[in-house]
Image (cartoon, rainbow, N blue to C red; front, side, top):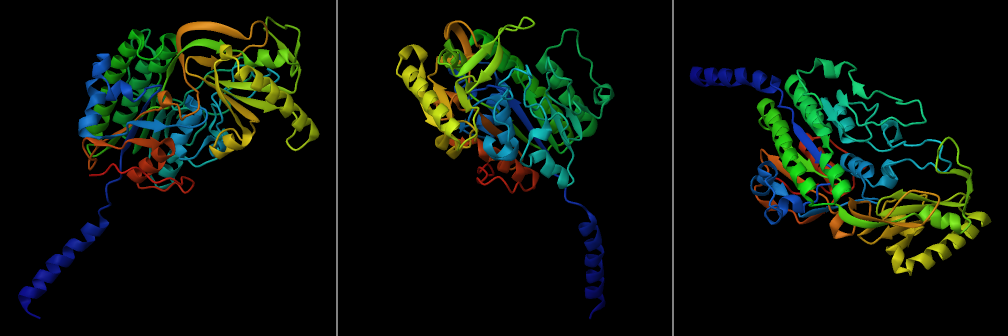
Length: 449
């Protein structure tokens, strides 16, 4: 071997250890949910005169869906959980926003707790892969194994809660270099906390949930002046978060999602009043100012805005269940043919299960857009509520489609994915994080160049 060749080989071999020893850079993904943002807010922004330059960048510089078909029901907590697990509510266990409370013992309780989850999440998969995680305002995260956590939580009026950490580490807010103005709103706080966490800790995977648009849509309906101006504010907040992320992780991928669409609602139906009038619920006396107590029940409606799951007290397979189901079916058939109740369709247990909805529901009542279910036990079974908004309908209503957009390194520019399934979001983000979600069966979307 010549001396020249030997020197060249030694020089080449000297480079090998440093190349092998240099770890590949870890991925960074920022996922922001804008609660209630219909895709048309962005894809048809000009028609509504919306000034949302940050969100509109995703249409030209990134990849986006015309719409995302969601889950049963199309409400916040089941949807957000599907977006981080890739499975339907029947599999991940978050069946609605609120928990079913037939005897009114747990007023105001929602599915706040990570302990209710039955499927692996993206943040668990990221943690197992050695990535750091953060979440601000993300549903179903009280007590979640997230490195930097400010969970979404609301105190129930009748329970000693929370059962798990809302903030982790407990002094996280104090450690952030965040100065909030007096009277700061919810999204303003969450934006500041998210920016603070990114700047101080630079997590590999960040989840943030902004909710002010949803609030205005409920009060004033979608594309109302109040909703539109709120989204313009949110657009600036999204820019703040994205700028913070790209300052510390220039190769990060930025994902924008929403949980459901929205419709204007002018009428509500109180299905539990209907069931009480049919003798399927027996009411007790008013106690401590409550509108009703429940003495006993054979069937109840579990409302989720545009739908309601009908639950039967008796155990499935028993004669009592069959008899109650027959009585409920007759009541629903009667009101479904009356246009004053605004029912679009009633789907039976087998169809609910087939589409991943509540596995214990005997029926799901789906209303026409413009109508929705409301809670209540006494009085009239219908009421007018002009000019407000809601969601929760079956996911095949086009008005209930939600948003998916992604931008960042190696993401195709100006690519339209058409209509996608909400269950595709989690495996897509898992691919970005280079982790696996075995329970997620659908393929990721094709966002790369």
